[in-house]
Amino acid sequence: MSEKKVFSEAKPQKSSEGLSIDKKTVVSILCVLAAVLVFVGILTQVVPGGEYQVDADGSIIDGTYAEISDYKLPLWKIVASPVLAFTSDNASTGLGIIAILILVGGTFLILDRIDVLKYIMASIVRKFRDKRYLLIAVMVFAGMFLSSTAGILEESLTLVPIAVAVSLAMGWDSFTGLGMSLVSIAFGFTAATFNPFNVITVQKLADLDIFSGLWLRLLIFIAVYASLTAFLIFYAKRIEKNPEKSVAFESDKLIREKYSMEKCMPVLDNKDVGKATKVFVICLGMVLVGIVASFVLSIVGNKIGNETMSSIGSVASLGAMAVFFPVGGFLAGSASGLHGKKLWKTFGEGVMTILPVLPLIVFILAISYILDAGKIMHTLLFYIDSLMTGISPYVAILLMFAFVAVLEFFVGSGTAKAFLIVPLMSMLCDLLGVTRQSMVVTFCMADGFTNLLYPTSGIMILAIGMVGVSYRKWLKWSWKLFALEGIIAVGFMLLAVTINYN
Image 1 (cartoon, helix red, strand yellow):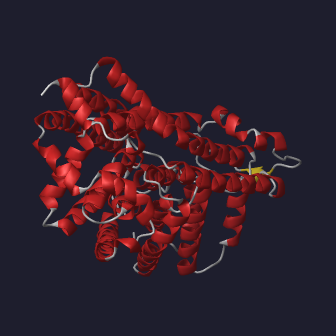
Image 2: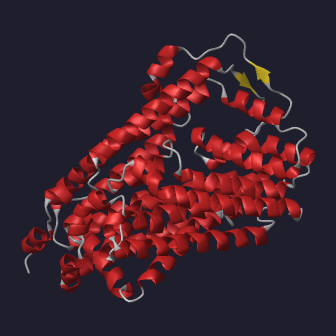
Image 3: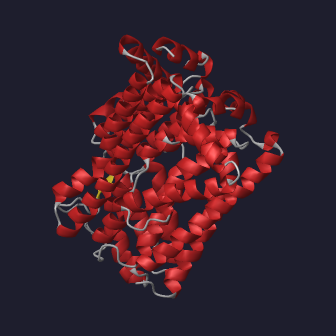
């Protein structure tokens, strides 16, 4: 078979190529984010500014809060926040996410054009055709394990389209695919065991031995894993019986047609596509090596107090994905007969498919900029600190959970939240009879599943945008899952207080 023939046969219709971001979904989410931006802008005008002093590590020093009199964030800065956001400390993070998205968009179109995505999907479906629910259990465990230990989250964006394609080929829907990829990885943060971005950071700030109290966190992992797996299997069975019950039924039609069993199974007989897939899978293996390296460097760096090693560990997994994922796409393209200008043109077209979601990242950065420049976060923290004095340990731990969950709306980064509130929460724990170890699991659980709840969650917004699911439909599907995990979290928090978990 000639190289030209391989490529031409692999090329599907352009209307369904690549990530195919749904523009209506993007517009609806953009409207929600605009409303949030206005809301936080109003907060800066009605809540007085204030600041705590911080130590050399950036942790808050208790008792140092001072109100900043006669300060209001100028209205013009609120209006210009989408531009000014790129002058803030969060700009590098935002630019990094944008760069990753561009690489993912370009790479996915290459993989789509040469049928590697169909080959991967067909291979998984063939292997688990008679063990379909085992597939859900395996994928949920893999996602939760990687995030619970190594702290991966943004990397889940590369898994979403494949998981959704597999889900639709199995007779399920986009939500089942999102559950096997995005949700499982985010819930791994809820059930964190060795996660360097919340467990290690929080325990260090709370002056606890790193990884101490592991036994209860393992029980939380088992409970969250069992509940999420059971939820997805029950839901998948329901959709199998009546696909039209899915709120994503209409938006799934195009993807379902493209990745139907009849169209994808013949790809397994194409040796050129098989060769290209092997090349890409090898590069994916290098991404996994980067994730392991990130985990090891973070742990060792924190253990021996080497900040440089810890810093390298914090970016190693994303760095590996940024390098090996697109390299895998290009090498796979070349292996299948897609070369030179055609290869780069395909990558460029893939980049264009991802561009509609970039304004979402800009708005999320703008919201963070307004909160920081408005100097109201420390004021809100001071008010919460004052309200919690003198209450019972059981009420205190529930209020801590609620506080972290609400703060997630404004501060998405678990590490940033830890430095902002853990020093004060640790002192409150001592005063209220709550062990600091209990506060660690409370922080992890509140930070974990709320990653997928708010419109300010960039990862969630991008993932549902990839498969054309609106934020309204996402909430309609996921609220029961959030309620279930919330009940589990409350149960473990009350248990931690009862047994004086330490």
